[in-house]
Length: 90
Image 1 (cartoon, rainbow, N blue to C red):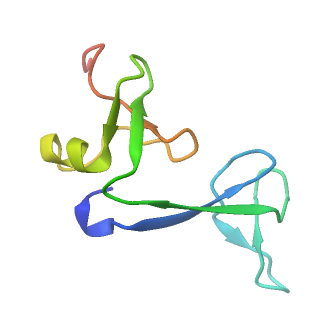
Image 2 (spheres, rainbow, N blue to C red):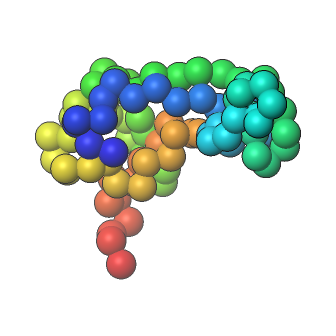
């Protein structure tokens, strides 16, 4: 994900917390392909959204991250986390 994709709206299943990527064929309603739930939560990722590093828990806004990188490395929309390189890159 990079600057041109923002603001980015996405939906998460309220039961298993996976990102919704399907619609039910007959009703065109959002549905989770993992658990089959139709209970959905909508979120928006903006330049001011705070994310945290998966390992060191350091917080940064999307704006701060995109000043350093072209894309957000290892972005996890479910946990609103990314990897800041604190443990190296190999």
